[in-house]
Length: 432
Image (cartoon, rainbow, N blue to C red):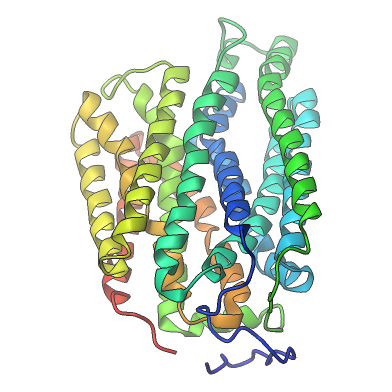
């Protein structure tokens, strides 16, 4: 396969020339599935923390969306360095670094709670996300290399089902632990010392949740370290830090990276607003904790869709399936924003089903035929996940400016329309 301009050739005498040359690592799929579960669940907890901190610090939607902005900005900052780190120390050791960084982020919630400072919560989320980025740089290309090229779309979608399992379970548990109120008052009713005391007490529920996650991450990191030499046949092409950006000159990869930016942005924007959306009187009028538990249904749709999609992608064109579900997402957004009651609420939640195969399918379509540049491609894709910072923030701005969450949903709809176009564009297999 021809190298992109600016990329140095590998000095290894036996590089993996094509993605179809699988790495020899029996049983490693299960390790990758576990990582998908962990980072998916932790990411989805943002949808629960957001309404909690919005109430504690009396934030508007734009200010509250800084939670997602700080979390997903880590993808912009850490994407390329994370890829370089993984290429230097290998997939398994890279996973350990990512897990320990995630653990550090969880522990930073302790000083954030003790000082009741919104900025420290944002810092903790950034550090936590930095670890997630490194883990994703490991998992996405690794699952592609653990089997033949012809089933990569199906395999990555099946692995993403474990991501969805985490995003289904964590919000339900998190809503119970985090959104339960310790007092019959709100931050808006307090001031001065009483307000500081209320914020500190209420944020303790967040701290306990993340301390538990920190312990679990430490255990997983220890297990991964014990098996750090399990991977055999791992090769990476050497390149400069900026070398991966040369891949954007390929129309298929560049368009795909844009769609990752838009997809993650749309998915996160909708997920972040579900609680407040369902609490509206003309939608379902739910209490905060009850609405928080409904977030799990949004992510459960993604889980179900990925299990179905892993089979469907073996039978039909991945590009056309992507275009179909993008059209479905646009339709459900239109139904939700033009109806009321349970129809409005459940049609919004059903978008999770449409989202199901989007990330793995866009990723695998964009990265077809990258071969030994897979880590570089994964680094760029992880930078594109920065869309999870930009689109939700813009959506929050539109919601504040218009005074309507329904109006703000126009932005995710535009994102899905562009993704639909990519599905049609990439409906045929890539060439070398």
